Structure formats: C-alpha cells, structure tokens
Length: 271
Image 1 (cartoon, helix red, strand yellow):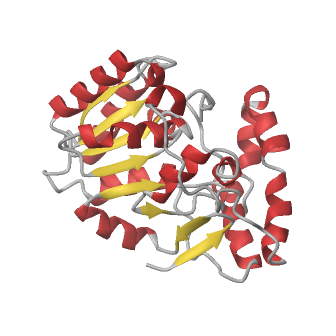
Image 2 (cartoon, rainbow, N blue to C red):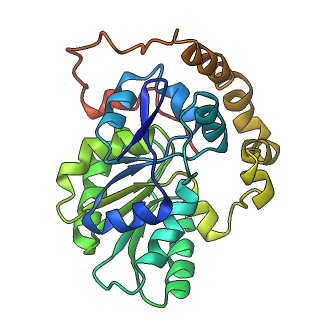
C-alpha cells in the first residue's frame, strides 16, 4: 500500500472499501488526526506505537488539505467514527465477527451495544466494559479487562478511551488478547453510537470544520488542544513543504519503551 508522509508519520493512502476488505484478515487500525500528529512530535512512546500499526488512515479533512498542499494527496478521509459503523455493517452477516467494546462512561457502552445490535439484527457486539478513570495505571484493573475480553468470545476489539491512551494500552497488552485479530482504535465513537454525543453536521465535517463544532460543544475541555497545542501544525506543514522538517526521533535508536505505568503518566487525554 502506498503511504503519504506527513511529518514523521506514514498514512496509508487507501479507501474505506479497500480497508474493510483487508480487515477480514485482521490487523490494527489507527486513525490519526491533527492532534495525533502534534502528539507524535512530543511523545516517543506514542510515535513508536504508531510504527507498529498495520493500517494508519486519515481521520481529518485538514490532513487531507495538508497532503494536497505537500503534493501527495490522500484520497479519502476515514475517521474512527465512520469506520466503526462501516465495519459492523460490512460484517453484519458474518457470524464469525464478534466485537468487544471497551470505553465510554457508565452505561454508555451498553447503550451503544443495544443500538448497534438492533441495527445489525444480531448480537455482533458480544460484550462491553467501561473502565474507570486511571485504569491504565492499575495493573489489577488491566488484568481484569484482559480476562473479560478473553472470556467474551470476541475476535474484534474496538477501544475508545482517548488518544494516546488507547493506542498505548492496546500495544502494551495486545499479546495477551488471545482471540482478538482485529483492533480498532475509535476514540469518541462509542459516545456517538450511544447517542450521548452529537457529531458535527455533515457539511462541517466535509469542509474540515468538525473541530470547530466540537470546540463549540466543549469549549472548556478542548480550547487548549485546538487553539494552542495544535496550532504549530501549520508551521510544520510549511517546514515540510520547504524540506526543512526533521523527525525529532530520527536519532533515537536505542530507546526502550518503559513498563505500562510510565506509558500513561502524560496520557490523560480524553476524546
């Protein structure tokens, strides 16, 4: 598969249809947006984790604009919140496809399970779990989650606990999830599926203003991310265009990812 390079990340230039067909063989899917790209400049564990994903697909119209400006256009935006419903609809008649939902708060995941299974016409979501805040630093809680997933009979894990937490957790414990062959990092999608959070109007998403809609809905939580942390993105795009961008991790050869407790000290981000 062809990749489009934006900063220190290679994004697969693939369509939704192609990705869904490939996932019958399994794989790990990450869906980077602008915020992920900025975190990849500062968080080495996150960067290393991204290198291990099987499919890295574009979750941002702004990234599509940037790729076109750089002369290597991405053909389709595939957000986690679009991919997940497309996935369960694509495989709704495949009785072998069974999904575990990990994420949400309170009964959110259970509500999403009920709604999805009703739409699909079978129990494609076999089990859910909404972990407590800080679960990623609690070894006992992590082992409990692993056991729940392994006992569920699921072969697909859809995890939505925010970036970079979901990606880091997945790779820390992926090898212990014996029956899972497809891993989808889906961010806020569980909230969307439950109906607890509204997505932006389609026209805003199509022109790259979904971030503005989300900011208007949750200004206290998101203002710093969108108005401060992510603004340097545009300067970095210009630097890449002028061939002045340098991967901050290019000289980091012997770095070893530390145990799970250190993975998440700076990963309290919620979607």
